[in-house]
Amino acid sequence: MLVGDGMGDYPLRELGGRTPLQAARIPNIRRLAAAGTVNLIKTVPDGLAPGSDVANLSLMGFDPGRYYTGRAPIEAAGAGLDMAADEVAFRCNLISIGDGLISDHSAGHISTGEARPFVEELNRAFGRDGLRFHVSSGYRHLLIWRNGPAGVQATPPHDVLGQPAKNNLPRGPRSEELLRLMDESARLFAGHPLNRDRVAAGRAAVSQIWLWGQGPRTALPSFAERYDLSGGVISAVDLVRGIGRLSGLEIVKVPGATGFIDTNYRGKVEACMDLLGRADFAFVHVEAPDECGHAGDLKLKLAAIEAFDREVVGPAWQGLELRGRPYTLMICTDHLTPVSVRNHTREPVPIAVLCGPAAASDAQAAFDEFTNQGRVAGMAFDFIHRLLSEKGEPCR
Ligand SMILES: [Zn+2]
Image (cartoon, rainbow, N blue to C red; front, side, top):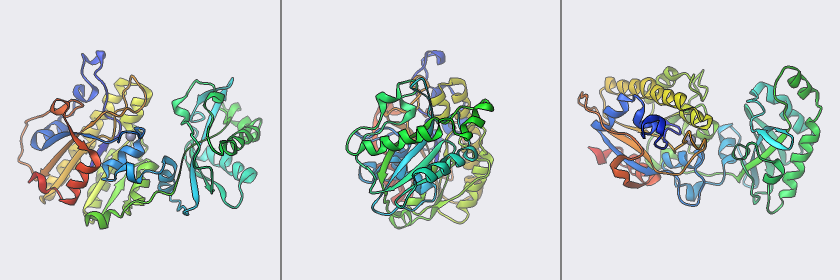
């Protein structure tokens, strides 16, 4: 399964009323769509937010309505942390606030190395038995809190950029405990030597932590037991790795996988073919199109979609054909990240499925948000669960 994160979009005037998927040069995906089938599937159940966590759970065949407990516990799994049943995981962003406004949810895209001493300071000041901060990556860190306030309503800081922090603080039961940590982190970091050095170097100061995305431990069924398939996940993103780890899949790390348009595509495809030499299933996730959607950069998004087609889909398909054995190849995206919205939306997404080997042909078919006149073939987790259970039989 090859996933281009956030490839879906809306029709754009700049593209003559076409979506980026319709306008991009994606000959491999279109040939695959012609040789196989294309359907629209719904990755985000009603009542859940269209996060990559929910959408990628769906794409691995898990019903988010049943298994989703929050974003942070999945990221914790992706970071290699094991949680106890009475622990609550929180996403802990390092953020910048200027004049009371949330100016940056990423503290200037702080690197993991730069963030580590800040997280260590948090543990020195507030850490205790049952409350521990953990370094994850970049600005994205984690707090694991025994019997922590799981019932708060907390807002992701990237959803309220430019807005007053005080209007977007956590609310609900025991939210004051969360607020106290956030406030105390602001006092700890104000004028801290670490920040003085950052500002002197022209970098954004880390104003405070922002806690959100909480939930208790996520428990997923074992992929191997469910489908009688061994397999692994190839992704630069902790969230996607977390879903893999929670379902017992191997996590394959690829050097130079950045989660952006400069990622090591070739390394990902090589790792995929290598994995398929010893296992049955590979989930290859490419983050770049989503990041371009968040940036609102249409040109870059088109380039990211085209790179996914050229550098991932083409070579992976060719690799499967060269092996000469039966295979099922699925190409999909998890959700829309329209450049006009700069965030995820919940409309259905296309999925192309090919059971190969396939006869060589230059025929092309559409792979976009309006496939089959917008008729939706159901929930993604049902669709994919069926495909994985029957090992591609439906398209033979
Ligand atoms: Zn996504």
